[in-house]
Image 1 (cartoon, helix red, strand yellow):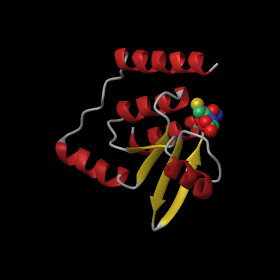
Image 2 (cartoon, rainbow, N blue to C red; image 1 turned 45 degrees about the vertical axis):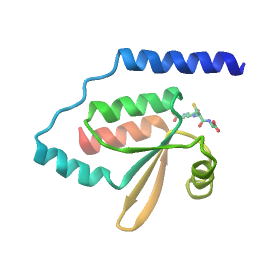
Image 3 (cartoon, rainbow, N blue to C red; image 1 turned 90 degrees about the horizontal axis):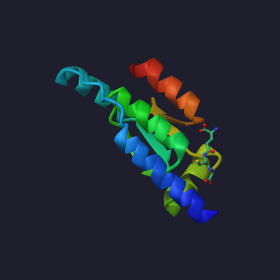
Image 4 (tube, rainbow, N blue to C red; image 1 turned 90 degrees about the vertical axis):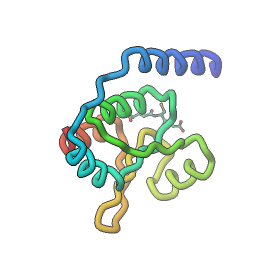
Length: 118
Ligand SMILES: N[C@@H](CCC(=O)N[C@@H](CS)C(=O)NCC(=O)O)C(=O)O
């Protein structure tokens, strides 16, 4: 089972690499303004999780620079569980007005990013 999952994961990464979406290009000043907003976002994720790949593709499509956090690492996983509420990826950590919220579900994250930045 582990081997099948591992192979599927590599296949997803390969296909994602080959069919990588086009990154939105903005003028430098516009990109700087967007970067200032995305500084407060972090995507907790696994490299080969299909739901995470979907969100990363939306991030690229929207030309966003969002830090990704590897939730497989013990410290990150523990933070996700204790602050987010459960170990499930993708999860978007949003910091606004000194308040942190955790958004689960790939479709909710994609909708949020598309509505805010597309
Ligand atoms: N409906 C969720 C499904 C996410 C999901 O199933 N993620 C898996 C990884 S692919 C997960 O976090 N599993 C828990 C774990 O690995 O501990 C979404 O669309 O984001």
